[in-house]
Image 1 (tube, helix red, strand yellow):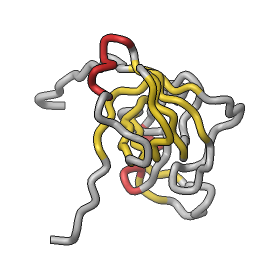
Image 2 (cartoon, one colour):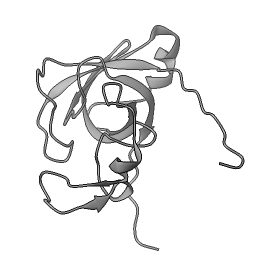
Image 3 (tube, rainbow, N blue to C red):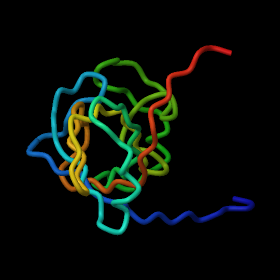
Length: 136
């Protein structure tokens, strides 16, 4: 591939929850848990408040290496074959996920959230505010 660029990320924290199975998509999940932010990034969450919605970007750290046959997949809840970039599968060329979570509470370096769809120990790459938008 021409102009291939390698990107490296350093996690800012990790997910902590008691779920023993793979949680369902955040839009239908009611799982609560914590985002544990590493001490050196704690100041970055100072303005996050209860009832906020946040976008959490994370790494699918348990997904197997991607292979070309995974470009087309059949999500279990849809049952038809679709391209990977039109579904929320963890099997992706770059194992990055995005979830919109509801903030329940925050103290020090821990954000308590609802709607988790990540495994315990999942590396958090970034947190962004959820911003609603209108069609242009």
